[in-house]
Length: 134
Ligand code: DQA
Image 1 (tube, helix red, strand yellow):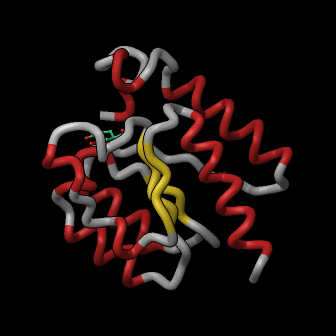
Image 2: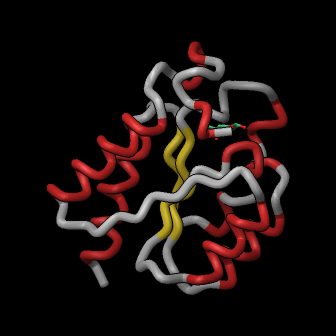
């Protein structure tokens, strides 16, 4: 439901729309000299297809509610030999018990959770750092 950011549960996810967040991401990516491609999908199958394509050097992913349910997304990430960074706007560890389990964390380089939209910008810095070591 990340397409509804700015309208949905604002107290938890903030007031910035996905369009505004994406502009911030694109702006920082430019500064860091990273080519960024942003995609948002509500369907798990579409997300699997995007991960499998692997036409990227690093994956920054907010798996939203699929974080807590999707072995399929975990397996897709494990199956491509690319570093993945897991991102959440909210701190999934301070919320409901069921959000503390991430199927993605075990196949990610790391998890950034709780900094609002800034989590995505932190993830870009992390991606830059990972790729500069290659
Ligand atoms: C989320 C946290 C998830 O638990 C939730 O289902 C989301 C958003 C976050 O960014 O904080 O949809 O991934």
